[in-house]
Image (cartoon, rainbow, N blue to C red; front, side):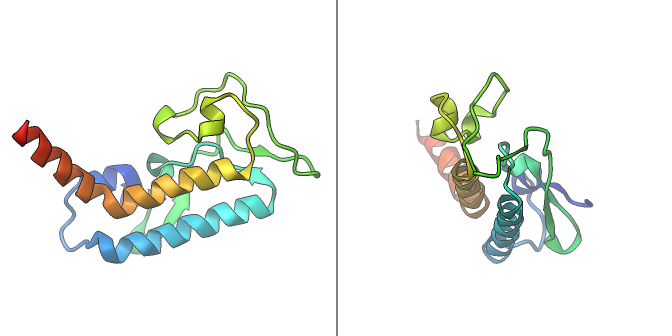
Length: 133
């Protein structure tokens, strides 16, 4: 992928990139990828912007499937074990050591969506508050 991961890309000032225009397109591509995984009963379990790879034309791919697991045919939930999860991105059921399913990926997708659409808002707010305080 020629542009790198979404997290790093959002932190750079890229000339000519208007995140209001690209954010929805990227979010839709992530949603389609996650939906395709869920149709195959696969839970990513580590969905976050550093694991979204951005290529030419802002086409994205969901990467780092090292924690991905396949659900049983009856779609039973998976037990959370001692695997390392990124706490910032973790769904509440992971933090509470409860069973997880596809809803955990949806929660993480929500954060990817928010981060993609509001990163500069949060960055600007943080900068303004740090100057004022």
